[in-house]
Image 1 (cartoon, protein in one colour):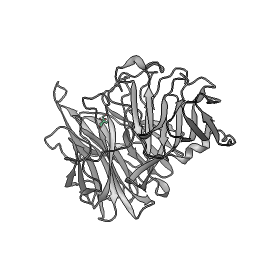
Image 2 (tube, protein in one colour):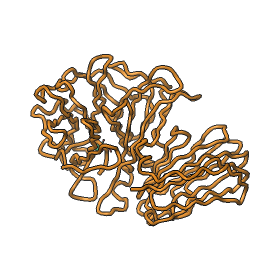
Image 3 (cartoon, helix red, strand yellow):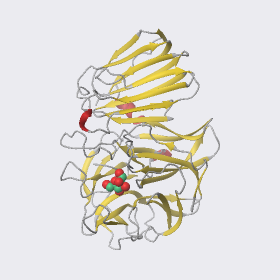
Image 4 (cartoon, helix red, strand yellow):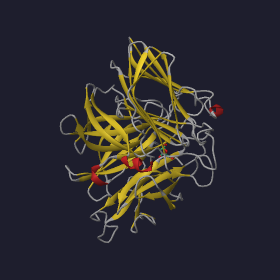
Length: 469
Ligand code: FRU
């Protein structure tokens, strides 16, 4: 599997569709797989929702609840509408294809799906990359909006009836980061600004693997969407990333999630090696669900992520919090977890000229190094050569340093699951997500080790909790 698709909450269920090739372990003719959950944690597989046919493969897209039967497809009742890209191969070369926007509908809570007889709703434009429709309701201008990835920009279309769409504007030229790869998988939503005034809009944009060794990644823009255009609050060259590591892609948020929450999920992978990673009868997985928020800080208005609160219900009780522990060079702390999957939390203060190494995974090589010197506070993240089965791909090893400013404190929260390390830094202002193939990850009782390699640190909190299920 790859991208999450069609995320929508309807009638007590979270729907999760996904790019799916059921007949092999590498990317192939795309279907929409389907699962539902009432709590975002336990998922029930349903029948494959969309199948490729002579119209093409079913590429990524979104879904909405047509509450008032605006489309006329639901006999006056509410129903589910999915927007997907039909991808049609037109020749033998890698560039021989065309893409168009289509819809499918379900009148039975997503259990069966019909492709609309009037497809496509937006015909191929004459250029190739034209895909991944994200549809939202824009109350202020009383219209449905579609954000669509077009080459290296995002187009916005408007519609009154969900069937006929008019191009309103295009955003992208000179904005954010461009690579030789196409822009993909847009998302668009409004959030209140915590610690600031009113609300701002967020435009999320996946950037397909270019020709560098970083691969696919996701950037976001903060600004104002007026129903026609997206106005970037920041300088066009400013690049904001949804994740600082390698494996958090094709992010999409749920439409109509209860309580106004903006919950998102991502594909834990990177197109650079997605078809080469170790397999176990399947390949590809989703991240944990995360809640997205906007916060105002010295730098401006930024996205902050936190793991969905639902996850607390599958954690063993939190250990008693220990007294803050001062440690100096050569000293260490070690915690042993009960089982493979764990949640960890660490609050730390570093004296000037200090360094701490943290190993979270069973290999006992440090994945994280925290350092404070005259360049400020920095976090180095390494996915090493010896860490599990990493030698499958030359692009897989990773070594990256994140600058965290002038302060002395750092706060980390992470989940280690069967194939992943998901790390949030400083209340989720930074996210570092990486797949991990440590063969020992599923064994019971692995250690988390913190070693001070220079200076002095104060450990305010270090907690490891096992996951119950
Ligand atoms: C992103 C993507 C989308 C496309 C889908 C095809 O990962 O390339 O742009 O719709 O995957 O599976």
